[in-house]
Length: 112
Image (tube, rainbow, N blue to C red; front, side, top):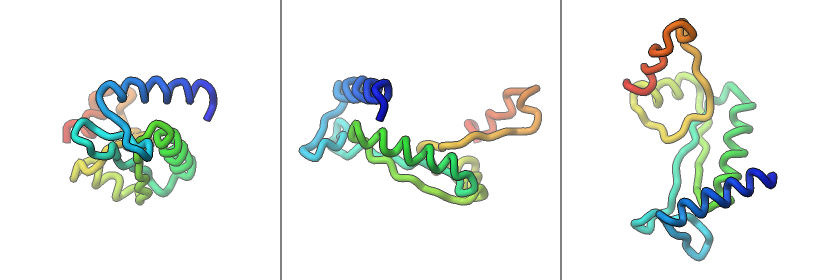
């Protein structure tokens, strides 16, 4: 982890420390004592995105977060994002034809 990444991680850990606490294994806990964890969703067709998700997972573990990576096909990503809204964090990008002209087209992802 680079110095700037480490400094940012430490600052984030201090911020979360105001709202949470750590157990003896240095795992971040929420106010109710539950381990702070979430899923990183990434599509299997893009190795660079998978590599980024792994780096994010490693960086977050340094400040006590548990992040699980779900590598799935693009069709499953669409189902999780649009139909089921079954996701915590998506490591990727979307392009929608016409979004460069009408930016509200991307609202489909956030209001479905």
